[in-house]
Length: 145
Image (cartoon, rainbow, N blue to C red; front, side, top):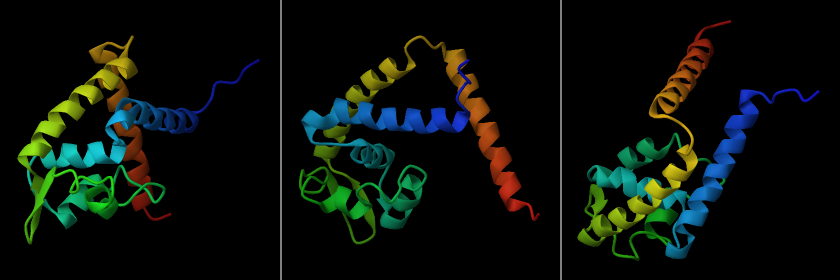
């Protein structure tokens, strides 16, 4: 008899598949999931480097490129002319806003593929359940033993 896999398996498996889906959706643009995450945050308005790092921290780990690479590396957003940077803030340039629209359309297509067969209610319930589980763990980690 096949034992159902635990939630940890499915979360890791899904995250790996999401990474592959983003890669497939964006590779012809020489972009990856991290590029998208930076574009998406900056689309909401200019941020300091610290604010940008904080907004992205839940999504990033040591395995991928760092923020500086995404912003200024060879395939970064700055060499493409998509960001503008003052002494304090990083924001999207006009070309960056245009690029965001193009990339957002690709991401929306990927999301449609990912959510195929799920109702809006099922998706909302999945998010709710995961949020409760995360809150339970956060609370337990804050509590002294």
